[in-house]
Length: 135
Image 1 (cartoon, rainbow, N blue to C red):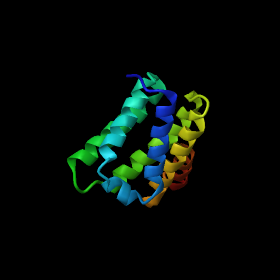
Image 2: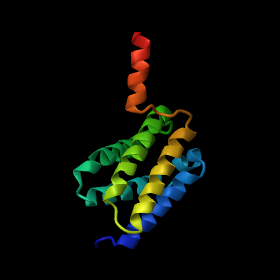
Image 3: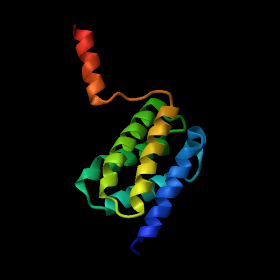
């Protein structure tokens, strides 16, 4: 059965809500594996090569949580930040009422990464830091 636009929107809303609370609780929640699998299926269904890294990161994160009782939070933070950044870029491909939900999900992912204690630098900031250390 093919998902409807409304089903995609409901899934986006529930994922954003999951990330909006305590990240530690969200990561320990029993439904996390299903949420990640639904998200992977939704992004794959878009059949958009621009979304490939999102699928890879989601699959890596799903495997990581399924294979350990003590997740590497630095790695999770990296995935969440990259997912947030790439989801924001992917919002341009969304239509109608789905687009603001994708943008909200991006914000929730970036906030969740920040909740884990470290902001990732932009490539421009990395370059600036590298230049300063080489001077």
